[in-house]
Structure formats: structure tokens, C-alpha cells
Image 1 (cartoon, rainbow, N blue to C red):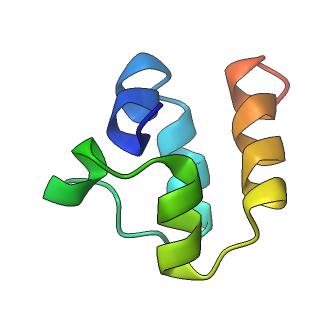
Image 2: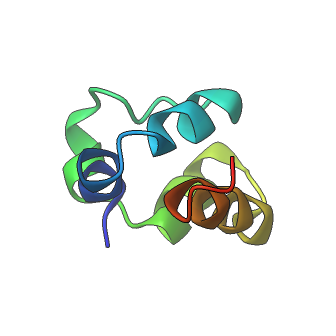
Length: 61
């Protein structure tokens, strides 16, 4: 799933993206970048980012 789709489907994930200081919000490439690609581009640990995303999607945060 691409980053833009995740943020649209689960709006609470926007806070995670902002917390990691990723520039995905409003970025035209966000409609193409997978989470793995975005993490690599922003030099973010993908495993940590995914854990935070999953927690928000489950409503744990």
C-alpha cells in the first residue's frame, strides 16, 4: 500500500508521519511511494515506523 492511501484510509496515521518528520503529506510522490520506499528516502527505520502505524490503525494510540 502506498503512503498516500494509508493516510487517506486511516487519517490518524498522519500524526505518525508528522512525528517522523516525513514530508509525505501533500507530496505528489506519496501517491506512488510504498512505506518501504518512503522510509528509505527519509532514512527512517521501517520496522519502527510500521509498528507505530499499526498501533494507530488498531486504535492503540
